[in-house]
Length: 209
Ligand code: URA
Ligand code: SF4
Image (cartoon, helix red, strand yellow):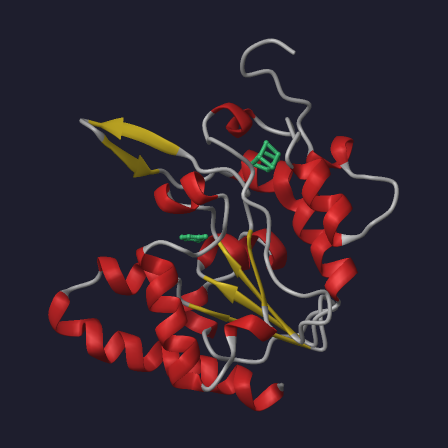
């Protein structure tokens, strides 16, 4: 395929049998959108098929792109701390992203995260839908606007509905909260309060497991 060429949808790369190993392998060769060339590798979701909760972030960051694993960088560390504070075992949940390649722009030597656009979110959604179909989590937790809008529609506002139980067919319980990166990016003096509010939203999840 030509440089940057993409089919327009991850659906063109779905395996015949939906299992997590088959999905992971197929996603590694996805050219559903042009981000396959921007990121180093596909960062697929991670966790057990029997997980009762699935957490969905936006897209891998710089460290996730290098490691090939979701939520292992600074946002991942904050996420781990919040899960622990809420009494949720990360080993027992499934963690993934709405878009599975890192989108970035160079600024000097740094690779600066760029928000995926609607075309990229739409192209990548079949992977997320397949993960949902295989894991069938009891609780689905959408971390931030990208994940929430990808699955609930572009009009959804996390700021208005965070921590609420939402009407949705996607799982028995569906809820949205802020993205852990937003806490890192926020004002330092607000960090503690924002972290507590995030943990409070995750306690709602813990109560549903
Ligand atoms: N931010 C995300 O949304 N996902 C990751 O995996 C890392 C940072
Ligand atoms: Fe495929 Fe998603 Fe990567 Fe685009 S971002 S190439 S749709 S895996």
